[in-house]
Image (cartoon, rainbow, N blue to C red; front, side, top):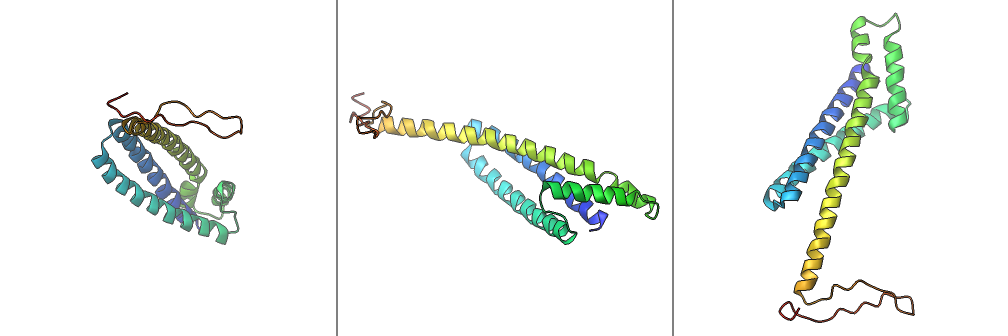
Length: 170
């Protein structure tokens, strides 16, 4: 694998991860404000970005496999180390060394950016879960259901029976 090819892929991945993190932060703000219209538009951008990142990931994995490395994080790190050390050998030009010297740090920056994306995704998932739970609870109340928690009966099954009360009678 050429150093420049891997460098280009890593730079594109890093740029994509940074853009995704920005989109995820915007998504969080929209989820908190419950701005469904803007959220719908943002989710379209997010889907396009994720599709581009997936395509780039597949290309990077293919290059790694063709170069004889595993297509996981360890393989990427090993490839970066190999290309970095190869570029420092006397038979390679100084231009190649300048590019390859940062491959390992570029891959680490990518992994750090992806970790931020995972954290932001977890926060957004929590917001969505709580919102869904609250909406379900409110809808249940409006339908006249009970707020009693499920309890187990002597047979070991959930024995909650909703009390049929309308919102007007509650």
